[in-house]
Image (tube, rainbow, N blue to C red; front, side):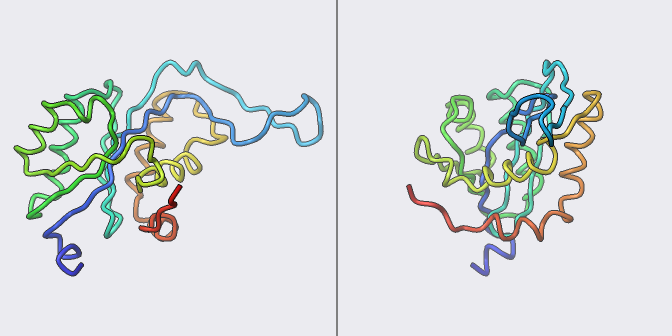
Length: 184
């Protein structure tokens, strides 16, 4: 474990999240006019951000990549370049990821191998084993749920601020992003 903390070996949990510019209610529906009713405005929901993220399972550093481009093999390859840049001194980079078609693509696997990145595909239907899924749930709670962003630019800026201010969230995330996994 000492080698991992010195950065020689990096282990990441990776998954893209696709977030539409619209609010996501964190409240339950109830009869209009009933005490405590909240009205939440909404947008068209036509524009979306694809947030590709990988979290270091040892020190909880994150590699975020935010784009409006579709998630496909080319986007994944660009993201892998970002990972390689961030961990350029690492002797070994291992990424745990799910079986999405654009991630499992032969060209993507070849490219990762060229960069010296080892891909480990998790069993199908096992989001409970993917550490970054917990981060996405936290992200939605802090940035998306019950929030209204008038413009897409405002939405984009709040998303970026979440990752730019990553250190402010780390203490909250340390208890959530542990290596204790639920076995189903």
